[in-house]
Length: 230
Image 1 (spheres, helix red, strand yellow):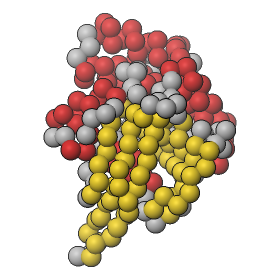
Image 2: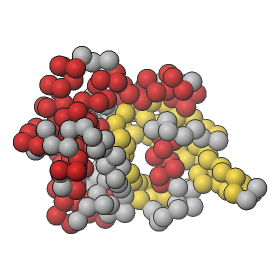
Image 3: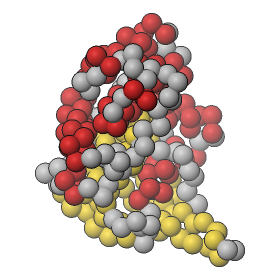
């Protein structure tokens, strides 16, 4: 794991609150290697989710730079940033954000269709990815017909279907019971090894962070500690 797929260089983020500036991120430097599983931990309000949004190009830093696959991600215009995000990034959230009117197969195929992949090819690749997460028998079911754990596995399949270089996950097990959390946790590590996709996961779950290759601890917008994981 020597090739960097994502970098944050001296990233700052400041918001205005009641006409006063609030520094949410203060000089963050992060480098994510190809195939690495990186966990980011810290108390609520420490800046973890804000950092994840900036890494994913969903928010712009006040200062500093994000580099994705060697490209100046944060300095691109919105259209080019969206194109690069669709090519190289996948996202998983605490709440699955699946489209309830579409089947699991259609939800997973969506990123490929947005990219311009032909519907037949997108459907085939989505089916293969759903098989990879153990949902081959549920491809025609819509989200309301799936359990919480199944919906999160569909979200994982959607994040990985386009073979991104990196998946960004914000509390991906935070809305699940213990049994489903363990299943999703195991699945993320299996998929990380199978596809060599990098993962950056914001989590409060000690069991998840303990298995990561590396753990970053944030406090008050500052990276205060970095530990090697397993």
